Image 1 (cartoon, helix red, strand yellow):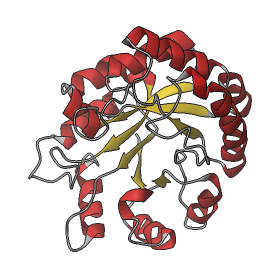
Image 2: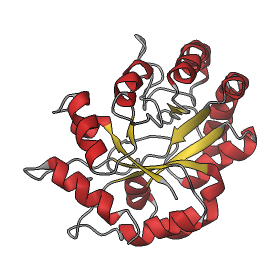
Image 3: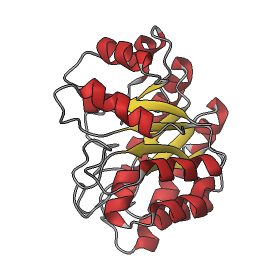
Image 4: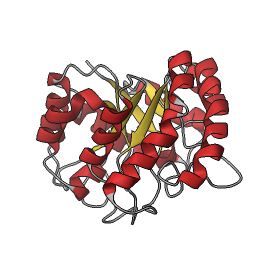
Length: 257
């Protein structure tokens, strides 16, 4: 059975301590997208940090738009992750996030090749520290125009080329519903390449309630059927007067009855 998490940025109106306190009371096991030094705060509430936030670098390299598909970034990315991977390991964070970047070099084949070349330089360090590098799938239709890793097949191709257990995908259910749909079949066909999941309602990226089109209980059962034991993290932007009631409802919907 997987464990529940929630993404920090969706509850930025609250202190990390408040989020942790509330999360712990409603059956959540982790806080996603923290920097390694913030994971210490989560631990004081008995929570894990399953995956880091994007690296912070003065150049902006390493963010969603500017990352591994650009060969001009590879030297800087190597420096960034040579610091971030050991820091994550020391903080007990098992996964480090990464991104493809926006399209800049041409065809899918070339974009995939450049991502693979850049990632191959840091995979040995990830293997040394038992850290999994996780590249997020994001839609380029609504939220992230020109993002390269916008289809599951793109991310899968990188996984197959690297052929390392220390590189996987973050399958964001919201983003992939917007971009390609067919969520349950895609999970079944690609689960071996996925080490983390994010949720949100479609359309709008809000609560996963009855106003949106995704059937989360069925999706959750499909994830369970693959044998997944990692984290499924809520990443919706709350609109209700009580966002923690929305969060509790989302956890209930994503917990088999």
